[in-house]
Image (cartoon, rainbow over all chains, first blue to last red; front, side, top):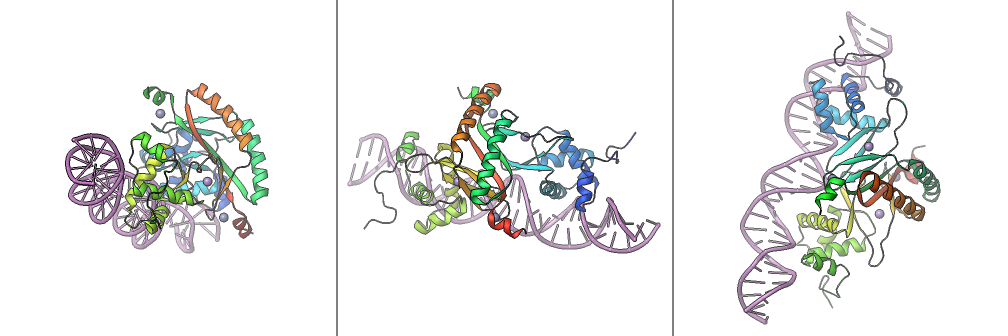
Length: 159
Length: 159
DNA sequence: TATATTAATGGAAATCATTATCAATAAGGA
DNA sequence: TCCTTATTGATAATGATTTCCATTAATATA
Ligand SMILES: [Mn+2]
Ligand SMILES: [Mn+2]
Ligand SMILES: [Zn+2]
Ligand SMILES: [Zn+2]
């Protein structure tokens, strides 16, 4: 039986690393594995703890450094949902990108991914991007849309 | 000649304070004045320094506390543009709300307000809000849209 | 207007997420 | 296998924001 983090078949992101001249290390592999297996919006410490279960030698510094690298490579997104720590999420699944936006409960911090209206939205975004790049000569790389409010539970409690 | 911060005619936000049972203090008045006079996206320290010029007795703690209060009252918005400090902006001018979104240069941190497509956008937002409130039973209070990329200057430098 | 009540303030210390340092380690090419 | 050097991780430092608490001042009331 293979160890928990022995090198299995090459992953889709190996090429990304090689192409940039980065080394494929155990911490990097496990951090990506943890991000891939989670559907939540993990903080650096969340990730540190999960990686620590698999690979106890991990250091928190390495987690921060790696996350920074992955953000710059475009493999993950970094968000601020207003709770005082950054949160991260894989930019795409193993195959296609999973384009979505967020509902954020300002009371309990719950975060909901939604994909509704991405088509209409994408159309508007495209139009806006086009116009804005021209008007401000701004080269747009990506965007975020977030809705803030109260989730069902917190909405109930208010009454 | 009136002093720099002697009480002039009642401001539009006096009612807001009174209604909530909050006291109208000199620090609060000047913080609002500074926000009202600036068109930038000020950090707590930016605001502290500007207020300090007018009212040197101000404390940084009071600035943070007041900003928090104003955010909760809905008089100002708090943003994270990724530079490690929160930034604030008046939710509306003296009269009407100034609904806009942001272009953020990830290289130099420049922030551009834009109001293009707010009509189309508002329509989409309304539709999305309606659908999402129903689907997730989520009570939406507000939203943010941010575009990230390179401003004209930083775009030029890349070449 | 003078007084009492208590919300609000501000300086100092504490918190807490994130970064910088630097000697030790390990990935990957030769 | 060996060499080069990118990467790591423990520790200390940083910097924005909060917490504490004794003092001050806004406002209701007499
Ligand atoms: Mn998400
Ligand atoms: Mn703005
Ligand atoms: Zn909630
Ligand atoms: Zn720029």
